[in-house]
Length: 227
Ligand SMILES: *Cc1c(COP(=O)(O)O)cnc(C)c1O
Image (tube, rainbow, N blue to C red):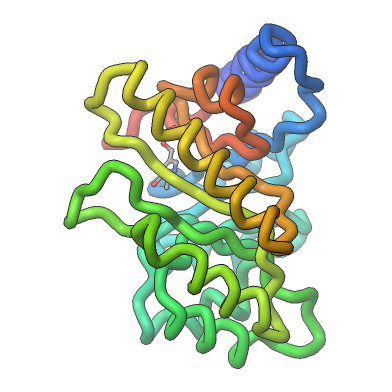
């Protein structure tokens, strides 16, 4: 077995035991393999070990990989910062976007989504750690943004995404995850149906699953450290 196959198995085992520990089924949790900065050979290895869903942050790095791996029929998720001049390529080459935090970007993505493709599956990124430098909409602005995005014809709003400060204490990360789950329930009580909580990475996936994560985004613990 290759190192990537072994690492994938151990991440899957962590997901399964975290789910069991809180009485959830492991099938409720999607594993997104974050392949940013990693070569196509590594992605092929992960695919050979049964992984079909991959996340990328940097468009210039992702597009050649997506083109080269077309034969595999992989599902690509864009999880990086969105810039207006990049929405067209995101709309054309990805199945999902996790990092929407501006209506302007969502409107462009909807307009630019090719009509012969499935609607672009979307999460709104919420900034719960209060860092100005980080992406994400504020809690106060979230409901209006969610209502507006839910109306766009070529997007399908699926849920919320967040990233706690990786240097914060585990209890603070856990409360960020709990807060995102609560925000999802609030939106649902207003009639905006969501089925996705995109939260949890290599270092904190257990905490995220305990708080209700349905999709964990794991890079380092599958592909090794990024240089
Ligand atoms: C890089 C990245 C990840 C993966 O982080 P790891 O700690 O390597 O698992 C997850 N989500 C986002 C948004 C990222 O940028």
